[in-house]
Amino acid sequence: MLVSLLLAQLALPDVLRSLGDEAEKREKAGACDYREVTLVEELAEDGAVKGSEERVYDGTLTGIEVTRREKKSVTAKGEPLADLLVEPKGAKGRKPARSPFHSAVRSQFKFALADGPTPELKRVTLEPLKPDPERPRGEAWVRASDGRLEELRVAPSKVPFLLSALSLRFVFSQTACGRMATLIETEGRSDTVIVDTRFRTRTVLSGHAPAVARTR
Image (cartoon, rainbow, N blue to C red):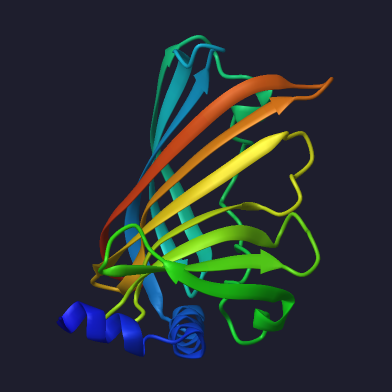
């Protein structure tokens, strides 16, 4: 009965406002240290793993920008990865695109509220008005009780250069630095003339703590 009542009260404008407030709060957040473990796997046509690399980093996130990313180790197995999957030397990550729920960009998307995978969750579908590699389409799973973001499943509305398909999944958890994505999974394929490969990645972010001052 309580869940039914909450679902009846949940409205799209309220959900978007809650998601937008959280996105804006995240952009203004202070520096946060964390440990990143990323597994990159190149796949054969039957889905078997041809080769992989596990990359471990210590990083700092300030707002939504990675301001420190120190490689601690790389463990390779199987065949060498395709050039597309090899990490560029000196890569420090880049500032991600602004959340589609942020009030400054919300007008660039069309949203709808639908039933979720369970009675406790609702889905917010998102579709950009104009396709672009930096504007995703997909769905967010939010709690029916308060509109809190639990999971985001998206794909670029226009596939980036060298890729023929790409999908991303973000799972959010409460950390010592606030609510953040703690699991990021991707699946992709490139079957262009230049590159022909299938891949998937899994990134686990843990050990979050407010950043401490560092001396050079």
